[in-house]
Length: 239
Image 1: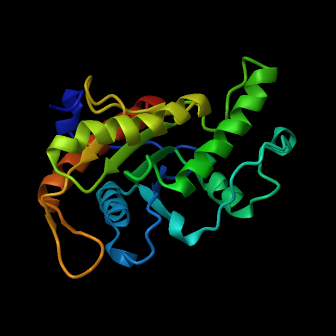
Image 2 (image 1 turned 135 degrees about the horizontal axis):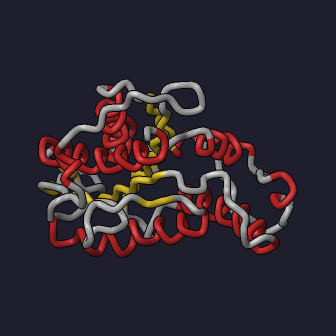
């Protein structure tokens, strides 16, 4: 299906500043797999997003969750006062980057259904927002209205993409709805972002399958989706 807006084929040009500086985007690579190193699909996709944004002189920082030791929320409620986690400095480091950004991308593989560290981040952001909203239904979170792009991928081809949407994209979008971010749809069917297929899966001597991708095809779809996210930023900051 085609992207949601015709503007996806017309690159958004930014002639504005926000917060007195160039626009900033944060791209979170959610993979937990250490052995993949720089060959992580999530990391490669984040790098491609950064390259595409760099063409527009937009600053994009990549957060690789493999570099952080995160702890699950224990429901202590102390974040109600500080809006930060008293038990997890790595979460606080990432959260500061999140709230300083003008747009976010979450790039996630399909696990069970999403990687554990990403779940921890979303869980704590939800808790911070919910506790304040519960006391004040007019409360707006620190990421209120921030455009968010969601990109999922897995180990199968086109036939599995709708399953990845249901398990990965929709799960992340559900959390972001509570957090009050604005998930950017690709079109009416893909209303919680995009999912990218493998081209071929090879079985070799290693215990893990080898996944090959049509990077030209995936990069084109990334460009289309990025333009939609940029249009949301433009609507917010560049009027």
